[in-house]
Amino acid sequence: MKSRIFEFIVTEIILELIIAAIILIVCGTFALAQQTGGTNKRIEVKIYLQKTEIDPSGATSLEIAPVKRRVNAAEPLRGALESLFAPIFAEDTARAFSSSTAGTRFEGVELKNGTALVKFSEPPGDVSADLGIFRHAVEQTAKQFRAVKRVEICAIGDTLIDSESANTFPRCSPEKYYWKSQFAIRRAKLRINRGGNFGNARLLSRFKCCADRENG
Image 1 (cartoon, rainbow, N blue to C red):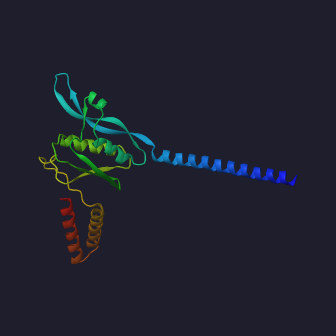
Image 2: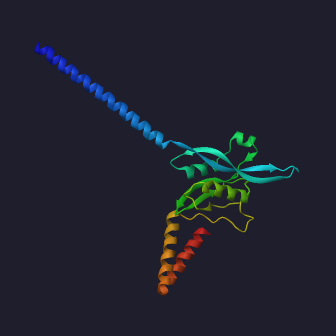
């Protein structure tokens, strides 16, 4: 009799442990699925492509117009710009759209104090992107996000897209040095405005020189 009671108790304990283990596995799987789903959640954004418009007289003109893309919700600005620089879809071509960034490559974006610094490069080869279309498309794509108040574009390496323009793209500065130099310039200006000495003026001149050289 005692042995049967003992076996029954042991069986009940084993069943309870099995049930508890199953509950833990199910809960853990659900939590992981929720976490993964949040990371991979996608949202709809706009990118601006070049479009050829034909008026009734048969004259053509180039404009930019939005098309929709879906990107990772965790980094919508980066995702939108990556889509802007990526090859366009067949359905876009069928609707008379073409790439507004053809011949260029997206190199990253930094957002600080409302300013989006968009970096691009130009691999060897022919560049077919129109300079005005390119600038406008990058700016409009970035400014759809409330956090972006201003857009700056810089280039990594040599570029041909702006070679015939008086308003060429500045070279991208190393991020840490760029923001450090900007802080040093503001600090030196503040000291001079408060009646700083000749040393602060020399400091301001040195950092301006370095910042200009990095951007130039």
